[in-house]
Image 1 (cartoon, rainbow, N blue to C red):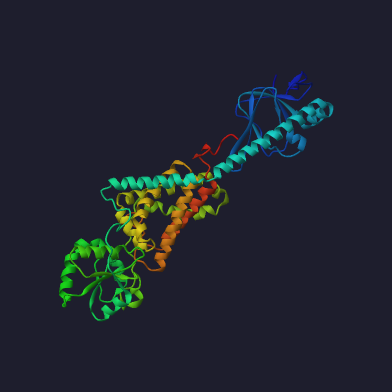
Image 2: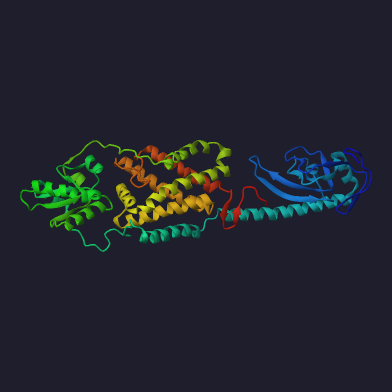
Length: 478
């Protein structure tokens, strides 16, 4: 029997026998029978074959609702309500259908109460089933959005354990707390130091890096950077012997940052070389307002190339533009791109810091925001945290928690950058050991872009994510 030929024999639909009904059509596998949103025209009965019913959003996210086989029917909801089709239907295999027009369908309901009751009963079951499915999906989505303390404990705990274990076997290992167990260094009060300065009774030595010293220092003070102590000490000793005609002047070390790292270590290094009268200025930052100063106009340090990660770091700036486009803003594919970009950046920067923690610790000191006891711990754990969280993002493991931690790192770094800019600190970002870019507003914008990427991942990442509910794919059955 060909398509379009009238049918007058009996049809059985879920146990109901119907007569002289519709037209027969044969459709190949993959053929679209009904399209979501179109005006309703026909009611369909499946004689043989199988079809699938699904809904699809504007950006292509498909939700499969059910599969129907021989004896089932579909299309009645839109005909009863007069509303556009609420779902699409496709043939899964070659299928033979009976196509009933709206006029025939209305006539059938008017003269077949048994079918009407059957359809009402079926619609009621679908509503109950739909409510349960909706509740299950809401619960599932809520669980995906939940972030437990275990997520953070897992990532932070891994970072701490790896940092401690690797530091033990690292040839460049550093103590967990600098100066732990070392003797106290004598301190001299600001007023006493000023009196000694005015009476020429002391030699003042700036322990900071040369860039800081050149920018501003106590007038007449010498510079002996701690990081170049072994190299510069012979020249320093010779200069002191030439200028210290009284042979009994005290050496007062200053420089000052919140960590006191350079001041204290330089004083101990001088004492280890036989210098007895060594003291550290206290409070650490008071010299900048009490003593006469000299220096040069602040200069931005030279920019050292970061390689491929440095170029990739510009990509977050472009995310600002994409975020302005609503469909792209909510795209899970953009979340995947953000995950891969952030993961690559943080892993690349972490690897160099992990192998040379002492260099990174000195970079942390330059920002002047970390107390002495926390510098080394921060340098060790932060490097591994960047690596662990970057790996979690790329692999899709607990990505919302990982995005939160990376966002927190970016907030801390932005605060440090802004503080350095306002205080005109002549430092590099310290992203990759000694290598880095000058601290400026461009660097701030890059990290702001990364922060926006973290927010996008937190809100919209749903593509191939391993979470407590297992792997979540963008297209999945509900």
